Length: 248
Image (cartoon, helix red, strand yellow):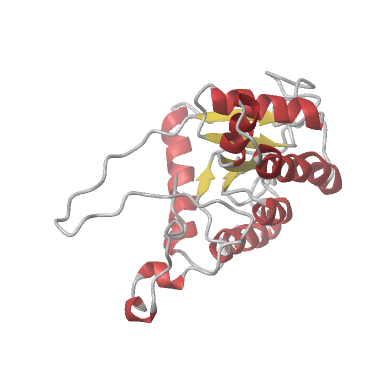
């Protein structure tokens, strides 16, 4: 993970802490639960680190592993609840398959697949209220889980965070599916980075080139790990400390 901005820290600093990095974080949407992170103690020691387990919820009809298994709201909620009960800390919700040969999905269709699932998971709070039962306890636990939105579109990411997501998982690392990089890639980079910074959410940056439906040539990857690492390093640098726009 790359922290484009510090994770939200609660309670937010008062005026006396105006110079701390956390004081520059914009207000977090009230629908979101927060993502805590280790803070050094007064002695300089770190709290124990935690490994987060992620459950992948593909709200799509054509994903390679579970296509059509969770593309209805009841099925998506059932999966999220069972994943959290099994130990998942994060539910990663995607509405656009990136398997080879996947069909194009319009922004409107991606919205309709992803946003209702995020809202429904957060809405389990209401269903979990009342007399304590095993089912209600599971609903409360699921509603409190961290949610990651798997999208390369800044509009979908922004709406998902407002609906209750906590993290952006971008397979194209902010530059969109166009390859080679173009002016559109640079504009996409600026918009997605702005969403992450304005809403104070951590991001997952991954490496992929070109539309999933396109035939891809990987012949230049004599050492795939090195080339992927080089490309990701460039994007991570730009996301954190780089120019206001990424040059195509």
